[in-house]
Length: 246
Ligand code: FPP
Image 1 (spheres, rainbow, N blue to C red):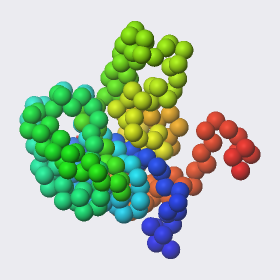
Image 2 (cartoon, protein in one colour):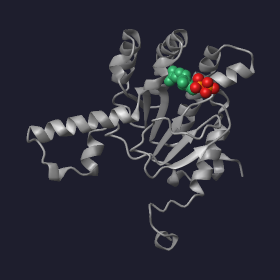
Image 3 (tube, rainbow, N blue to C red):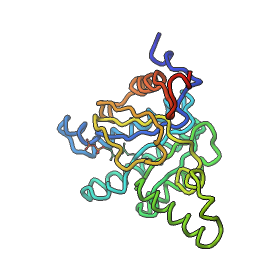
Image 4 (tube, rainbow, N blue to C red):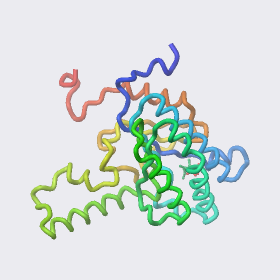
């Protein structure tokens, strides 16, 4: 049986999130500049987006740029933003062909004008697509997202739009950037780091975590298949006992 045949199509994660890490080290191993790693990272993005859509994963969220990433050397930040613009231009066709809707989460206002313009154009052109939702986390930080949600909820309480007593988990969900997405079922991080790095802290409460040593530019279809098979072989208990689940 091939790897892909081992994947149960009716038991896919409803929401797969990926921390794409290791571009810099991949380039360094080859004696190249970090930007070369990011360029090759975009090829992995395309491969994993297409494969996820092919498999029937409904929601894929990629951590493309964190709020902390602004602190990288200026030239690297500029290169990443340029790559974002060129990838959006190139990938529009693929998104349309595969019926994929693009959305973005994060402090999008802080992106350079050109990147914002390109991004919103692709979001607009793909907004009616239904096969998969691809969410790019750009200038994203989970604590900032939660802080904004708290502020918005407090504002509504102050203005008597909602009562203090009515605040529950679903109200908090409705004030996150990810309000239209289900909770994350599987979170993958590449490159051997075992950290969450301020990514979707609320949304991964019950997610299965999968860490691999593979560096992001090398992350192949088969690596994704392996992660999914591993996920499907885990028992998700959501706080219950094995007996209650079975
Ligand atoms: C982590 O590698 C990767 C990033 C900070 C950016 C991810 C970006 C891409 C995959 C390409 C651009 C994305 C889009 C959507 C166009 P790192 O630089 O932290 O690697 P290191 O840990 O080895 O230094």
